[in-house]
Each structure stands twice: as C-alpha cells, then as structure tokens.
Length: 207
Image (cartoon, rainbow, N blue to C red; front, top):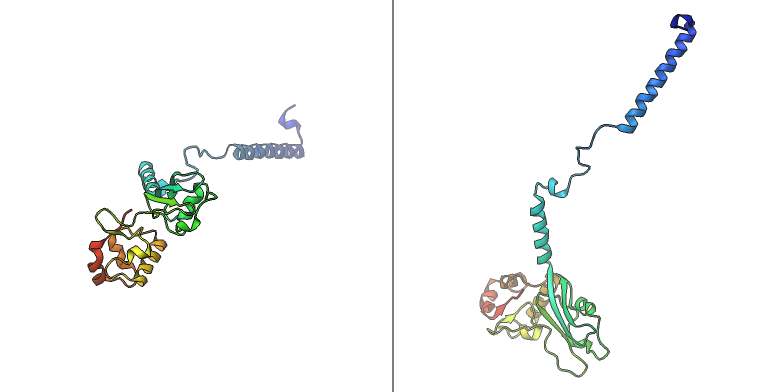
C-alpha cells in the first residue's frame, strides 16, 4: 500500500490526523517541561533588595536584639526569684509574672508594678510587714539622683524640681522607656535649658 493508493479524501484525513497528533505532542511537551528556570531565584531576599551583605544584616539584627534586651533581678516574695531577660518597654509587673507571680505573703503594694524596666534593675518584693529596699537605687555613690529610677520623693530633693516637675519626669520616662542621657531631661515639659543648667550636676541617668 502506498500514498497513491489512497483517495484524495483519505489523504486529507490522514494529514489532519498527523497534524492533530503532532500538535498534541508539542503542547504536551511544552506544559510538562516548561522553560528552564533553574538558574533564576524564586524570590529575592530582603538582604539583596536592600543592597546589604547577609553578614552585615545579621550583625545589625544581632545588635538590635542586644540593644532591645534588658536583664533584671527579681528578689523577695515571688515564687521563682532569679535573673530574667526582658525587652525594652516592659514593666515591673511583666518581670514579676515571669518570676512566677507573688507569694501568698507578698506585700503587693511594696513595688510600683507600672514602672518601666531598665537594664540591671533590681526588683525586690517585700513580704507583709517587711521593710523593703527600693525597687532600684535612686541615688548613686557620688550622691547624684538617678532620674531613670528615682521616685517622686527623691526627685523633689533636686534643686528646682517640685512635685509638678517630678511627676512630669516620671511620666516622660514611662512613656519613652527612660532617659538615654541627662540631656533628655530638657524634653520634659517645664524643664528648659536654664533649669537644666541648675540641676544637671545633681543628676545621672543609668542605662
């Protein structure tokens, strides 16, 4: 049997079948294999988008974590006293809860639970009837008042600071996570350059 033995109609049908089979095969190959994209990354990392080397970004992230980390010491009438790692902006209540909460004999009024934590802070929860040391020392060995720790009564001993300004200082440090330096005291409403010059020798701002 050869090509000439087929009628014209049969030849057309055979050609159509060949074209259909060939087209189907071509489409199948294109769908299953697709273009070679093995050399193209599926996504661009944030490091590449920002033009930074991975090592540089990792170092920056590590430094940010360290800067955001606080170490506090929780003592006294709590269930699990110890040293705890906290985050910037957390409060005394967060540290007490991390230490297991108050014991049954704890004097919950002995500390200010709303106070913002600072690095190296000592939190002492007194037992009922016990005279407790302050949450953190407000006065340094050099006699200066620590504006990041001092209660209102201690702040009022600073020349030029009365009850109103002492309250403003406490409000500012609670809202902003403390004072980075004594110069930040001029950001407190009511304390300008002149007032700051009068009191700067009496204050310090621990980290």
